[in-house]
Length: 76
Image (cartoon, rainbow, N blue to C red; front, side, top):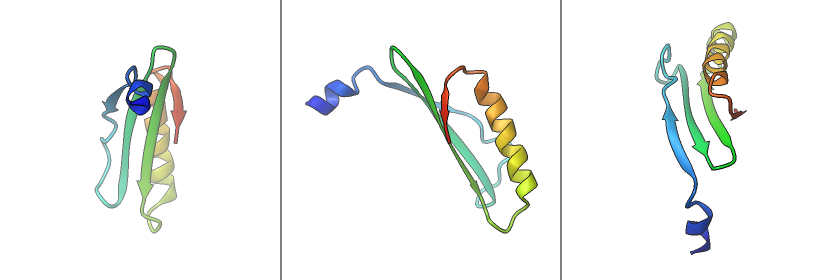
């Protein structure tokens, strides 16, 4: 019961940031958590360790640029 009341005012939205991604190569996803007083974006990125780090860095930059517009705290 306490847990239900704690999350009663918590809303979430899926964020579409999967463009330019390839399954099992370069993946990213995000969710936005919203309460009455704050917004938090949780971002997950995955890169196969044998792939080019420069492409991963560019992909991270693109995702953060897109998410920055939502004016929320970002957790990677």
